[in-house]
Length: 320
Ligand code: NAP
Image (cartoon, rainbow, N blue to C red; front, side, top):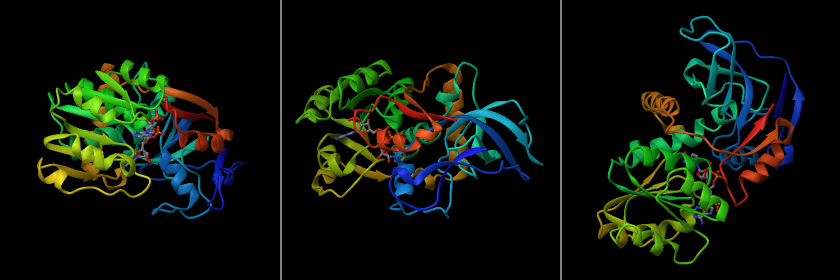
């Protein structure tokens, strides 16, 4: 099979397409023929060598894909060759024509959801769901700011929060991103490149502030987020690319909380609950992954450059 291989950590060009032997499923494993692969920022951090979790070299990046079950190992029940699935975790890497997965890492891809959309679910939708419900404990009727609503996690968060009955304000940095977040369910969207954009967002809550803020760039926004919270408000730090200075009094006066999360820390039972909810949302049409750009698998380096650039408009996927 063809697969992207990384032999040394470094810039996007260290990813090269190679011919390697097809994997075969062992006990408890499923082999998936990959039709589309999701590109996530975390794969760029890992590839650069700067991330805390570093795989043994050489490796194939990625966990999120849409595809078809090719073969099933001993002891896997309820899954057969030919079934459409999305993957949230792989053993051998998703940037490839075939990927080995443990049975818990594959989930049914409902009819009407494309393989490219399947590739857009794993990290982004699971992160958005966990941030909103398992970390922020958001409930229907609350106001939510999705700070970075035009990217993979942001679009997912907007759809999930809107479907759950929350009042959703989003932010994006381009006219295209603003239109996307509105189309996907945000009640109002502001431009996070504008100074004072949070004041405009707060005015959409009648001045009360947000019960929940899902933050994609905490190093830039956290200090101001704390001033934008309602009494008892929670900020979930989902993305951050540096440090930030905050005034702790902004949390004290509001009984506010700053909650961190890494999807890697999700307990198995919580992850199973998340994917059960996501499959239901895909089936009933409330969750509709948006594809911003499709590239061939060999263009993985360009995909990594694109996912770290501004002007997000949904997911970047690679097609083997
Ligand atoms: P993405 O698709 O590249 O989207 C990035 C988002 O950040 C876009 O909506 C972008 O908006 C927005 N953004 C840019 N400048 C911003 C600003 N000043 N304020 C607020 N938002 C801003 O990435 P993603 O997959 O959605 O991931 C988002 C972040 O979360 C990344 O840093 C990623 O590493 C992190 N993440 C963390 C976890 C976890 O477990 N903690 C899981 C998944 C992702 P424009 O492009 O429109 O400006």
